Length: 196
Ligand SMILES: CC(C)(COP(=O)(O)OP(=O)(O)OC[C@H]1O[C@@H](n2cnc3c(N)ncnc32)[C@H](O)[C@@H]1OP(=O)(O)O)[C@@H](O)C(=O)NCCC(=O)NCCS
Image 1 (cartoon, helix red, strand yellow):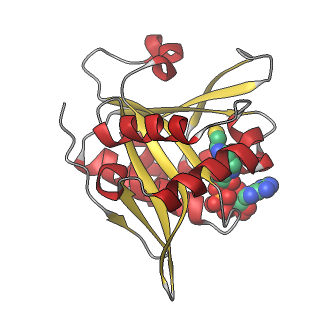
Image 2: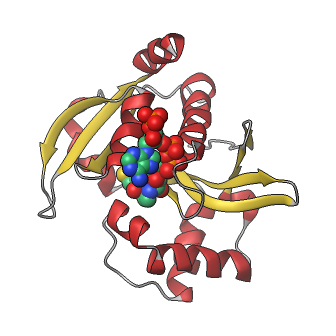
């Protein structure tokens, strides 16, 4: 499936497809730093691994292919230009979708949300980025459903999902830490938007 990703521009942030961004030394260093050294990121996404430069290259090679994951770098608009502050994606093929096998029809266009801000958290940018992506996926790419999950104790992520209009599916602890599994349909997202 070819998704023809494009830039998604909001008031404060711009999402640029990683296939367009590429990976230079600076972004490799920044991304690795977020994953390895930011405790809130590590706790939020349940990361225990420490990444090498070559691991980051492998991750970006996959992101840039845009086949299994539609991946964007989140940039903040600043007076001096665009600053990378995180990433957001939907996984369209792979293990992340396995827990949701029962919850969609074969012909549905589905994805699994991933989001991480390594900078500038708690200022509304995560919500803005997710809304930009969802408008695009549901309206232009005709997605039917997006799945997601967050640790029950991740308050920022819990609130983010609630604001977007996700419905809770079930609670489980696949890695020993309690996680909430959720879904949102195109219709529910549109209804939620009309309410806001
Ligand atoms: C989760 C995350 C993407 C949210 O993005 P963000 O830009 O920080 O969140 P926002 O500023 O858009 O806020 C979303 C909501 O969460 C609340 N919130 C933000 N940070 C919070 C915190 N540290 N504690 C409690 N609530 C918080 C906000 O108040 C807002 O709710 P409100 O509108 O009712 O006030 C971001 O914090 C992050 O990347 N965290 C680390 C990695 C992670 O946890 N990823 C998600 C894995 S499921």
